[in-house]
Length: 127
Length: 210
Image (tube, rainbow over the protein chains, first blue to last red):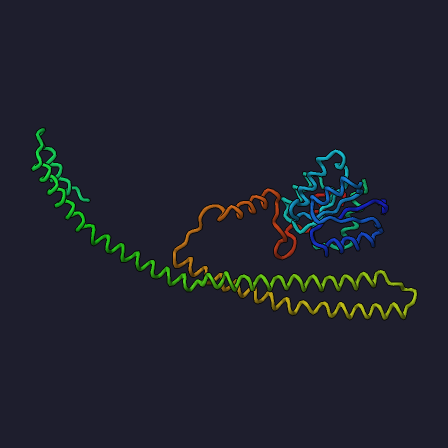
């Protein structure tokens, strides 16, 4: 896997269980530095304090959704280049199109497996 | 009021003189009174029929409101359904926690001692089996909630039919309007029934490097 496993990863989800699942999968892949946030606002705060190499975010959260977070990140020159993967149960085509238009690097539909997560991370860093 | 009711008044006014006397005024009052008497006599029977219909409708409405048992729904059914769902959330969360803890313990275990590793795996797997028993109870709880929803649906449907209810346009409250506006603006649909609406393979096709 041509990915820098020492990079910091931020997982954004309002369900602790999902954070725990993604944390474990990332750990299996080899990532050691994984932080989490419960919504877009908290994530944005962390991103402005620490440099993350990858953000993996849910869509449907309150108060700030993952979609809003993505737009905030892409609109902030200091964060705009951060790779961003959406992991969500929002599976309508209009969601995928909107996320892509907003600048998402990849999109995973829940429920997903370890292989899917790994392949999408690899795809994001294959540029 | 029918046109002939006005004829007497019209005729009087047509023939009025400039030097109107008290007698003229009294004549007009008498003509008006006679006219109105006929008018109210005609109206009485119509109004009576309509009031009788309205009274009957109100009576049936009261009966239907009684059958709706709105207070019971509000004070008992809905809170109980909420408690059941809350218990389902707690049970699934607890089971998930147990299962994940077991998985994490197995993943972190030292496999260099096969006997100890096997014992640990067996112990954790037993805990996983036990944790999975939540499904039986949560299934029963969800059935109770579904029954409550069906009961409310039956009562509300009957009531709506009885009053010939028509849905009004737009949201029912400001909170509902705000929720709907947020849902549309942020494209929030939630999980699709029966699995993802767009399968991962179709999503991947939209990201060429996937």
